Length: 161
Picture 1 (cartoon, rainbow, N blue to C red):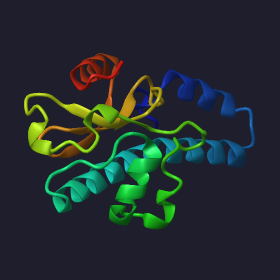
Picture 2 (cartoon, one colour):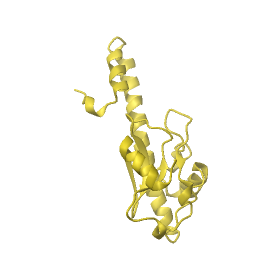
Picture 3 (tube, one colour):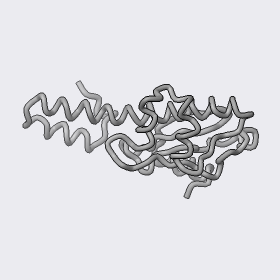
Picture 4 (cartoon, one colour):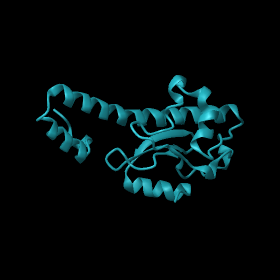
């Protein structure tokens, strides 16, 4: 049985509509939807690990966060999945690129505030039931899905408008 608390209302509604379709079509749709959602989490984790490794090898200086393509070029070699790295700058199933926080581009990690969670890479718009996938820094790089309330605080702390 599906846990409705973990699925968005849109997903539950679509699943109910699937009942009238042939089972294989419904299954394919559901698997692709779940793959896209989990892919965003993988991408943010990969950004997190790659940024952390880059900083460790560059005297604790963050990579160029001016835009996603510059970040991609610098962390490509650290990616857990380098053959797919070129495709992960876009949210799965869309042509919407992830966004970088240029405010912290090439900054030494010791200059980042330790008492705040600083967002480095994030989704342009929430996709996981009003939650944003983000890569953030607070002593080390981390990933999470942030709900609206946490996202508002993270944006403020990180200087994102």
